[in-house]
Image 1 (cartoon, rainbow, N blue to C red):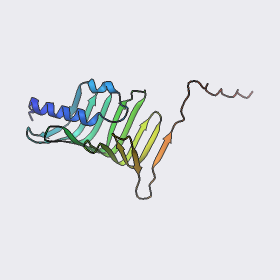
Image 2: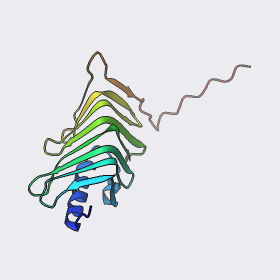
Image 3: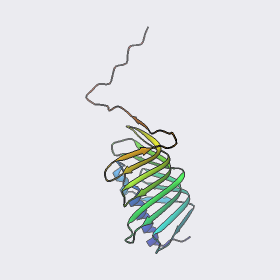
Image 4: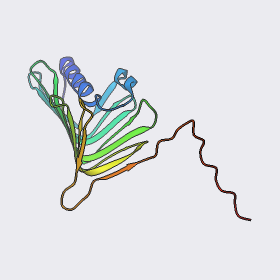
Length: 179
């Protein structure tokens, strides 16, 4: 299917704005080429929605997102309104400004730009150097930084946090080996 330059530019700006806002991701990634691959794309010039299906892969710098389907919605001024990613699972990886790599996965990732929320549902996990969070549903408010995690059906939320390392405090010396 042929896609006009205008439609391609709209899709690129939609993806770029919608997917790169969260947390402490590598800021220089936003200046990199955005590349979107999928088996199919269904979008129109006057349509405020684009649907990518089949082996969806979105890359920009160190950001790598993989999903089965991506549905992108724009407002009347071509501003990004919502990005919905579905997969088995959806995976996201990106380097962080402070070092290390963020990894997240869920069955569904819903980024509502207007509400400034990212909702991961279905075996949601977020891992970064300082720790891991998992639950059935994780909600992150990009404006306030507030995080909410829940589980259903007797499941539990799990949070693992690594202790802070203080450069001024020397690491413990291992005990001498027994002879």
